[in-house]
Length: 110
Image: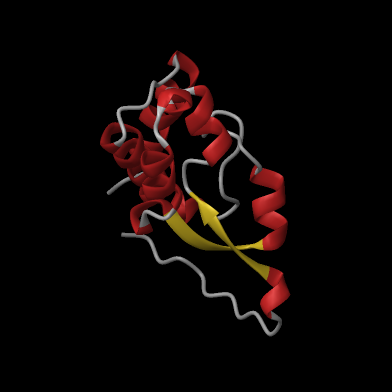
């Protein structure tokens, strides 16, 4: 596996806890019919959470992999795997563009 460069943050305000699959994206792809309990479980699922810079989080917003990717290409494999895992885990709908992007990300895995 490729090494992911370490970045040191000195201010807590420079980091966010991000959802790999954003809440708004999930809502548009099947979560709109979930109960409050299901939405809470998704929002707090550690499999779907990652520490990210606040700038990257704002750039990502609620975008899917065909719309946004982490700047660090060494993370693309893991990002794609985690995205796919979460979407399957919660039975969310994949678009064709999203699936094509995930197939490309899978090619970065070694």
